[in-house]
Length: 113
Image (cartoon, rainbow, N blue to C red; front, side):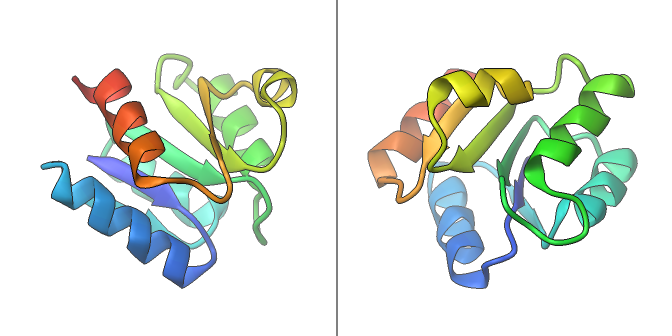
């Protein structure tokens, strides 16, 4: 399962369609706080999180997960930040905004193949 953490519904729905078209299941969370609840109930295979969100940003979500037993959970940061900042935040990969279908497919293949 791919957990998509995004507070903008059109972006979340687009990602769900791409993930499901690639043959994977997807679930969404509207912010980092909601994502933590989902992750504690059902550990995803991959987390794709936006950086800027209310009630727990992507950076805060990554830090919380990395500090609480999820160091090996693959996390893709979705943002316009650079790769150096992405690594500083503890993410495994960067999905630049705006993203293309090919970029999402490549990330899915890399982390879920």
